[in-house]
Image (tube, rainbow, N blue to C red; front, side, top):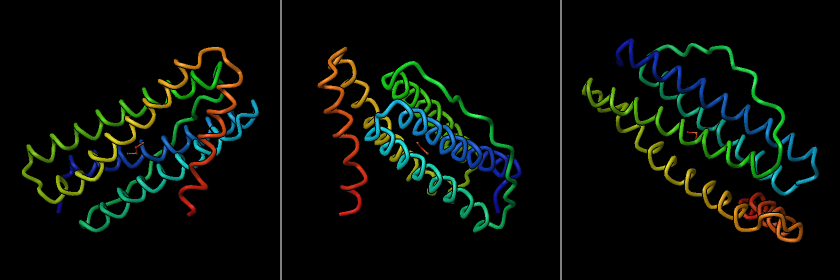
Length: 167
Ligand code: OFO
């Protein structure tokens, strides 16, 4: 059994993961709208992954005989000024999520809650990967600057993400 404080922290994180999914879906819609279909498809897969993250929290909370309390999901931003701005916002969001996960790790350590601490290990690793992959895309945007040709290539490259996963 986990503490009440931990139950709240895990439910709050479940909500943050659902919001992440919602935010990335909103980013996918914006990218689709400005005809960056490869980037839109990348972001849509990201939204699916965030939903899976949320479900990991959902399942863990139930597994330790605690209570899932779903909360309201905030309305995400719906407009950005450019695809580069979208990916920069995604990086900032991932950094915020990492901080949030680390805070729960600290709480689990303080409470000597080894089960939750071990459960969170996967998320600690995942955040390192997610931040690195979005940072890599942001750096590509910085390199290509105003080049339309390079932007087209980047859109195509990001669009391959789903195809790679399917093979
Ligand atoms: Fe983007 O990460 Fe969830 O946890």
